[in-house]
Image (cartoon, rainbow, N blue to C red; front, side, top):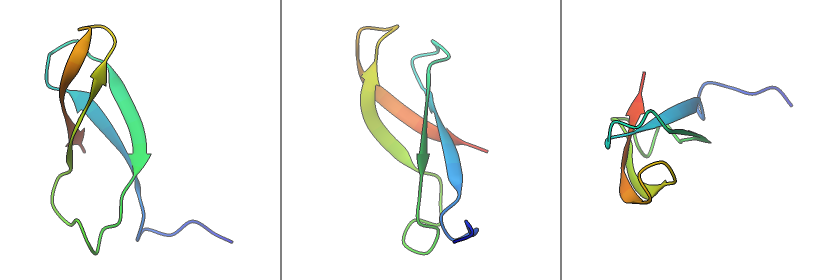
Length: 54
């Protein structure tokens, strides 16, 4: 099965300024704008917001 553009791979970059990133997939129909998730940043040592970068 081929991967399509309905669920693209996105990079989530830490807003703490550490440069740490997560890689995930998102559904473009249900979440068309930029994704923001609160995840653990091991460089900062705490949970911070991670924003989708394009």
